[in-house]
Length: 164
Image 1 (cartoon, rainbow, N blue to C red):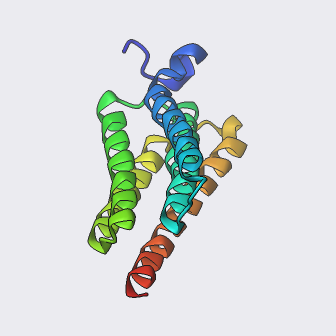
Image 2 (image 1 turned 135 degrees about the horizontal axis):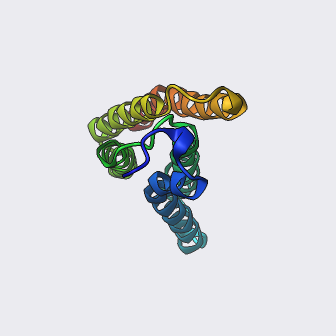
């Protein structure tokens, strides 16, 4: 890409690194809504949880961290970094969902580890931000912190659910 430094990147080009996260996050929100609609007649604890997880974590959080990185990164994130983030985020979430639905705590744990790795990659991708975007940086870090803190809570709840 001819633009390396964020100060020289036109605003419309800044959105390019966010496209995979916008697409996958948007699809996850729609899919979560479909899960909720299809299972509304006979909802279970797992289907209700899966619908909410798809919308809030896989969808909304992915939109927030993907767009946040695109707006905050001092340089456009490399395709390699974006690929690593997409894979760790979405495979990690798939592991959490599959592990929960199949009652396989080890799979939930693996998914949680991948999510933590993904969040570290997102933090590294947005380091060295511009000072005029401080409020955006605080919101971005807050979102990552909320998701990061929720990972061990979710892992604990997976163990509690398995023992009941």
